[in-house]
Length: 330
Image (cartoon, rainbow, N blue to C red):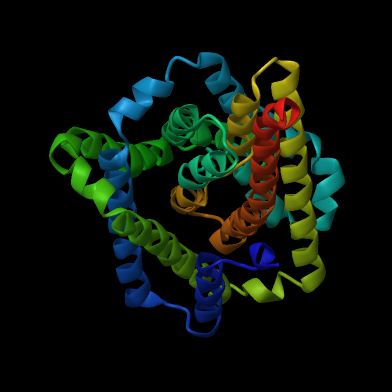
């Protein structure tokens, strides 16, 4: 049963939301937290750039069909699901929450958990490293464009080129700087992976605290009754289920090997909380940010619990398949 319980980071997110609900930051304090958040996010992407091994990228780069399949799932399948299912799913939540769902559908894949689950399930790890990393970096440019198209289509505004520039400056430039500095600090960063985890989670918690503080001061919990929160869980589960089924059977229909199918499933069905929260801070400056990031937070926990079960099943099937010839021979 422990795999179905929230992990430590999820409990930290819940604690941060409770802290913002009872002790929201405001005024000068909110400005200080906002500045700290920007610094933490830039540091996070700098460390990601310094950690990503060029050798791993080269090792998995030749599998272009797999990478295109993952990118198609991340940036085509999910947005189409968000738009096509809107008439059915939007009555379950408020308009601002469904705006958060549409934003969720445009986000890149995760990096750490996609690779970890692929490894756990005995999939193609080098390809997972390339696919997840490429998705994360391309998302810096693709996600704002998709948001502009989808939000403009829903009548809630259009794309701000200033927002794209702010995202590139805050996320992509530090990543490139990290890649340049990798020759000097890459080994140290990989050796001290706990530092990256601390900055990763710390930056998210800072954004969540400032976002929910502002939302609470604007009356968030009066706008979010329990039935709507339950509806949001249902919407997230439906989206994840559709993505998992599409990636699994799509990979088989395209003739991918079992190891590649695993990579496509775990890289193509996930959405990044680490990228989504800072992007939301820039792209939705005029919207209730707490309602925008709440769908991402819930989806994050649901995808972790679901993929943990799937990875274990894939691993057991792989072990059984490897043992089958030995059993027959004996």
